[in-house]
Image 1 (cartoon, each protein chain N blue to C red):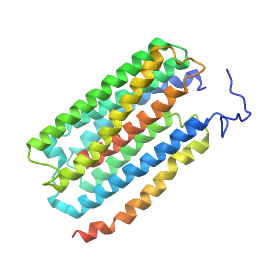
Image 2 (cartoon, rainbow over the protein chains, first blue to last red):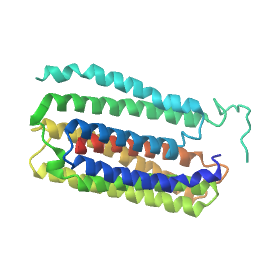
Image 3 (cartoon, each protein chain N blue to C red):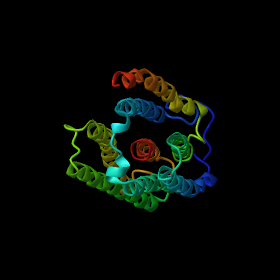
Image 4 (cartoon, rainbow over the protein chains, first blue to last red):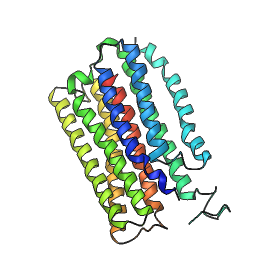
Length: 92
Length: 196
């Protein structure tokens, strides 16, 4: 059972998620260079995903092996992105 | 009640039941599904270059941002429903499951509105690669949201009949895992489709 005190971060995490979403919209509509925008936006998206995974999906409190299982497809997904890259040059 | 450190027949690891492990393994397959979809979208969009329409310009970012916030709120109500039944509060469980369902339906309603707007602008899957990829990505996600709502309704029905308690509520946690995963997918879809 998850300890009682871990209930408190739920609302704090929600506020953080809301703030990050607002920052994302601000960054996307700002005059920053595209590359800079992409870096900021992906960093914010990953941060939001990690917050949801660690606190709402309780990975922070569960067995470490679940984190390994949850993270494993990220390696496969990265490989998939690399494999799909030839499609980019094929279309040009 | 403290969990025993001994491994029970239903637990491959201490504190992790077979059902929970199975749910995580299912989510791994779902991550691969969306990785394939998103990866293909990125490759096709990169090949499209500067000719690729801007989703933000066609549909606007504000409504999608509100929809993102709605789905995040549904994640909060979902985790609060779990927190409620952890303390044996059945009313809190049912109330938060209901809020989660309503927020999920609101998300789908806004999504349907966006689809209608896109079709009205002349972007259809059969005449635009942009529309084909947009409808595929958001359609798959919406289908997952709809499926999640059905499961949440099932859990809510069981909760109304007193099917969960402070000692036995794993079903709530497992449906929560799926729902939070759906939220995470949308976090990335929102960023990749609307903002970048």
